[in-house]
Every structure is written in C-alpha cells, then in structure tokens.
Image (cartoon, rainbow over all chains, first blue to last red; front, side, top):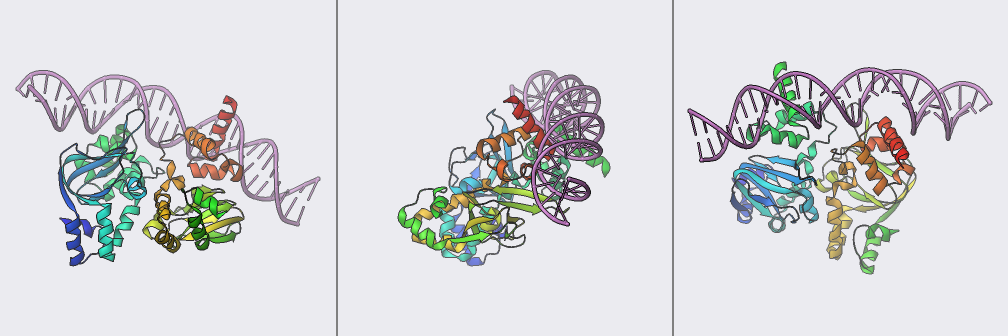
Length: 186
Length: 186
DNA sequence: AACATTTCTTGATTCTAATCAAGCAGCCAC
DNA sequence: GTGGCTGCTTGATTAGAATCAAGAAATGTT
C-alpha cells in the first residue's frame, strides 16, 4: 500500500520505497476522527489508503466551509499551514473509517537527505490543487460538476451531494438541477 | 532599499542584510517588460522597490486574466511555478517603469545555508495570498472592493479601475457602481 | 415495522451581477 | 484645434444562482 502512495508522486526505485516504508506510519482512523485541528501547525502529509476524509474551515457564522474531499489513493494535508508552518485555519477529519499513511516533515527531510528522489515531494507540497483551490470560481456550476464527473466521479458515490455542493461552493439545489439537466441531455 | 525587502518578511540582523545585498540583483525594467513568461519555469522572487507590475494569464479566448497587481514594497512571483518548478501558466510584466530586486532560488539556498534567518523566506513562498488568491470568491463585489480600500488603497491610484476590476473578477461596470454606492454612503 | 431525521428534488420567487447600450471626459496624435 | 482612442459612468435588460418553501426518498433508530 505504501508503494501506491509513492507512485502517485513520481518514480522511485526499490531502495527508495524501502526507505519510505520505514518512515511512514500506518494509522487506522475512525469516522469523525480529527487529523488536523484549527490552530495547530500541520506537521504531516496524509495518504488515504482506504476510506474518506475531508478538510473544512468554520466561518464566523459557524458554517462548514468544505475545502477538500479526499478518497482512496489521494494525498491530503493543509498546504499553507504545512509549508509556512503557521497555525491551520482548517480541520481535517475522517469522513469514514479509514486507513491512512502519515508522513511527517521530519521524515521528509530525512528521506531527502538519504535519496534525492524524494525532492519530488516538493511539487506535491507546492501544489495547492489538492484542495478545492482548483476551482478559481470563474467556473459555472455546470463546469464545476463536469470537472468532478471527468476527474473524480467516485466523489459522488462516497460523499453526500450536500457535501459535494459545499465543496463546489454552490447550493445543493443548484447541484441537483445541474445533475438533472445533464441526465436529461444524455 | 534592500533592507525594506527583508523587513517585509521578518527580522534580520546586520550580517543577514549584508549577505542579502550580495545575492540580490537590482534591475531597472521598462514599462511592459516581461519578467516571467508563460511556459518558463520561475526561478526568482521579485521585490518592487519602485514602480508597478502585474501578473496575468491568457484564457483560451485570449482574454487577460489578471491574478496579481503589485506596488512598491511588495514581493511578487509565481508561487506554484517557483515552488514546484513547473512551467508557468502566467506572465509577469512591469506596468510602469520600475526598479525591482531579483532573488534567485539558488541565492535563497545560499542564504539559508549561511544563515538560518533566511528560513523565513519559506513562508513567503508558501503564501499564495500574494496574488489574487486571497479572493476565494465567496466574497461579494462590495467586500472585495472594501478589502482593497482597507488593505491596498494605493492600487486604485496606480492601476486603471479596469485592471482592478479584472483583478477582482468583476466587471468594470460593477466596480463603478460599488464605488458610487460607497461614495454616497460616506 | 414504525418513526424520526437527513438528504435530495422540484417549484416559485428574488436578488445580484453580467450584459447590452449609450454618453461623457480625458488624452494623445495629427 | 479636431478627431479618434480609451477609460469611466450610468441606465435598462437579462441571466443565473440563491433563497424560500414544500414534499419525496433514503437512511438511521428504536
């Protein structure tokens, strides 16, 4: 399972993979368990082996603002907190019982020290696209949904549409109508 | 002028400042001159000593999509291209004749090697807020303009409202109306 | 199974910003 | 100066998504 995690990032040889397996921790997390809390400084990357997780922040009014939905074989973390080592504005929690890999910053440093291949982690950390950041919001609800259908259709099986709508920054009603319209078009 | 650049990032002692001055390059750029071109991998951070610059990308239709407006005493660069060392999707150009400092990645590495204080550059590079990314687009046109008024009012003196509107992802008409409404409220 | 709760859909209405359109002011070139 | 741009404003209309509202379907609980 650790091999999958590396394969999504780049190319690593057997020696690299062995190093990685020694650094990474396997965690079994229960539904609702919190992996990163607002105010804490992110210290780890996570990889979803199996299960589902999501990232969200709380607006002043207390509303849940979903910034990331994560499925099997996806890395997830708070990029800004991790890279800048500043307190997180968001929470990361398991949406379902999950098996996740946890890789600390210290481990990444150790790995880079031992093998240059691990420099490839830089692009992962630098990419804000892991979250909802992809949606720069010049996109219409239809385009957002089309993107999900195209690139991450399984989201719709795993998470309630309500959460997907929150993630896409549209209302559940609008999502429902977009889906209805698209279904009729087929 | 180099001292200003460091002061916006954190605290540095006299030795650090001397190291910095040896690494940084002073460039005089003309209006319209391009500092980063689409397709190139970003290799430098820039600091606007004096003048104005902006970042933009071209949509398939050829429209200019402004993602950053930069004034005196502001750092600017393409964070994703720089951090991940991937080709840039955007251009950075001078909007007016300017004096800018240029600091290469290699220089940053050298500086970090010589003084731990330069670790502070990590937060700068990690912060995507330098661009328009601040606007997560849950904000209304009024809120966007209020933010500019509050935090970067000089933008309105330096750049045409047309560009500010593009930066805020609203139409010039909407910006005009927001301004008119706010002026009447005073 | 019966009930309660949550999620999803559908319809009617409202609201906001985009679009379409026109006019004005400032500025440059000639 | 005159003519032609460009930027800015103002008005009328349109379009699209949010909101408000209600009911149906699915899910969970006892």
